[in-house]
Image 1 (cartoon, rainbow, N blue to C red):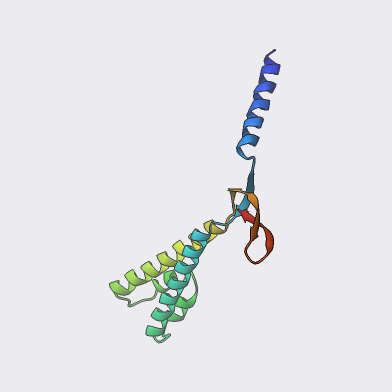
Image 2: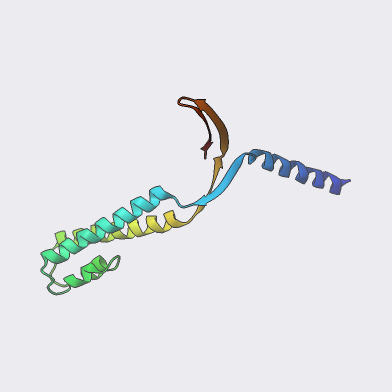
Length: 136
């Protein structure tokens, strides 16, 4: 008797789950907001790093600043730098790392349920016309 109750509960649960997804399409898509934000932060951080390297006239350790993600942290190891330069390199490095993490997380696809409706359309403006309007 107990086994029949468990099987009946599983059947009801699966029926309820399929009723919730009826009429929906499940799609796996990346999170474009995170992708765009991460890519822009990574590019802007690298551009700031390239500007800092150009301001140093590519002397000493400044060519390392052109390396994405690792360049600002390698630049911190350069001798004879001011506190302001160190703070700027830390800010640039954190911007690049944050952008890379957001980009990586955004590229991981997640499941999205979308309602799919298709409606036939008919009209008569300059003659008979018919079409289909879809909403996804």
